[in-house]
Amino acid sequence: MSSVEEKLGTLTYKKDHQSHIAIPDADICLKKCKDKPCVAVCPAKVYDWDESKKKIVIGYENCIECGAARMICPFQNIKWEPPRGGFGVSYKFG
Image 1 (cartoon, rainbow, N blue to C red):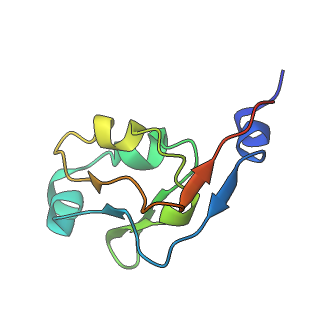
Image 2: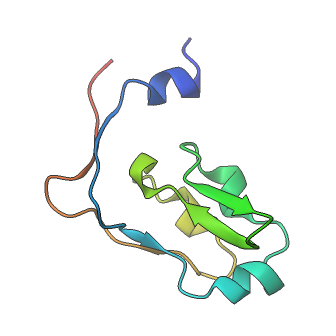
């Protein structure tokens, strides 16, 4: 059986210069969200807590559009929209 990392390696991405993901209120992540569940749940590691900057850093280019982080955010502080047409992840069978 393949690992999640191996399966993610089969995906292709067309990178847009414009992010389709945002954190509307960075203060919520800093002051209210102790556990940062988006960092732990995202299989593509799109979200990362930058301790030096005290904020969530988003690597939107790796998003597999599963919605897990948005669903687990206890403060509904992740704004996600589908990537613009022609951009984002492409899945293939296998």
